[in-house]
Length: 182
Image (cartoon, rainbow, N blue to C red; front, side):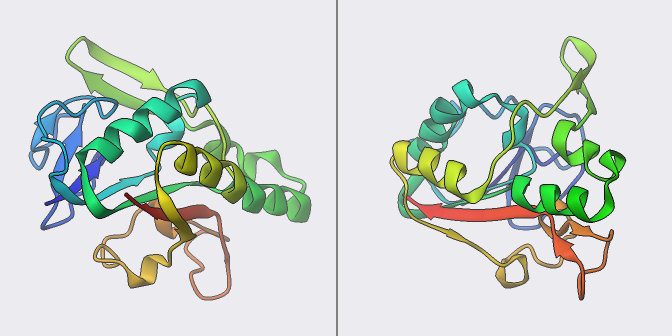
């Protein structure tokens, strides 16, 4: 079983989709902090693309422990978040805060059972910090992954975020794509 957590509008065939949003492809309309609908050790892969940063650094550890609970031993957690180091590089090159303010702060409207609301990015990550949190949550073999080598490579999402926008040949990847093993 492959899970796509915080998928929003993005549908990836072969995945079970979990999000608070109400789209036809959502299999479980639920928050992604807790996954009571899944048994311990039931997922081979958990993929979450640019959703993890919507939780603050104090929530991150418990969130990862819950996701780890759902993964099978040897299963993979694959995360994509804005890459703070790359965003700083973009700012240094351009001197234009508007080029990075979206990935830094985010802003997305969600339709929850209580009605529409706005959510914002609540933290930033670089490889060192995210690796440390993943290790603390019990994950091992933390490494970067290439989106080009994934099951979902044909489904354009923020794991393929570049500066300049969409310049996948010569641009700077501004998504920190990291995976770890349970």
